[in-house]
Image 1 (spheres, rainbow, N blue to C red):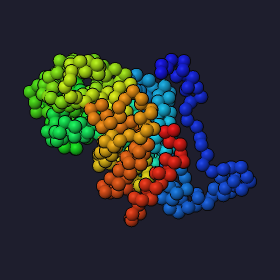
Image 2: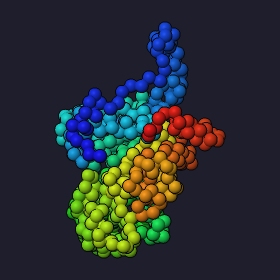
Image 3: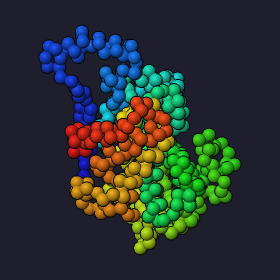
Image 4: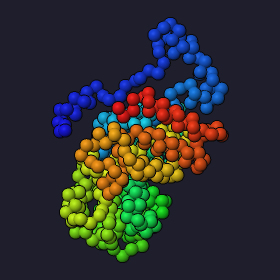
Length: 436
């Protein structure tokens, strides 16, 4: 199906989000309970015990989708107003896939000097987000340019008692790790054996490196526009310096010789077919630049011929799409369900492992019907599950919740919460109209 610019603009007329009432206000008593005088009762309860805000307000299922508009999709710095359609879209996906109520929060006057142009002022963003927290159970940071995004997430995560998650940093990393886990099974190489080359050292690339290393990958070479980030290279920012490799190669092409996995979070058409051909036998190519990947899947297919390989992109018109909607709705769903104070690395890794496990299961007839031209059987063409697989809602969110309990991030009463959590999630699937 081909969508025109007119089709897309018509779809966005009037915006994509609105208010859904969860309680009726159609009688005199309903009006009295919704507002004055009845509303005084929950006010007193929350004043007595601030933890009751989760019981008597929407906070426990409400996430703020926050951006200053400095890195909007692949469009760059477009400002707070222009980023609203993206933030609304994120809120739509939160609800449709995770039954999480998200609300767009575009931030103006958070640039250096207090204006609406120039680089992000991390302190202004931090102050603005911190002021929002009484209402929200979680903060999803979005489209904030590096390197400010690292400082903002790290400081807010340390400061606040609710989950803070920058999807541009971690979303791609969570799903990429899921794909690499399944690739490792297919090629019968342990994670510790893999040689990985990442092209792109921005928010996503650095977090991909961190997650791969935490999962057990020992050899990760990170590259930016100047080549390999290696020890001794001058003027490296702190985040890049943390991942500087002790290698002699200088270019991404040199690094790819004999490598098992290429991960691209950079720019279109920056990798040549002969560089892929120089990789190890049975390679994996995750070329995720959007809308055009680092190397076209057709070019990889030609150079690989009959040899086995895994190919993934960020596009929906090719198999193995690395789509962040596979991550953030379920990460927040699990975190909110156990009232987690953070989304820690253990929770992110648990999400990756659950995603990988779902891809290894036979798909339902419903999912297969949505992708009639693809064979959705675990293998080279299917290492990452499809977003419309409803099992993700239960399996990934449950894995995240259980990881939060194990790591101590959760704030739930002791006892066996698992059966109650699973039943609640299954009821959400049945009654909330998710992914229909």
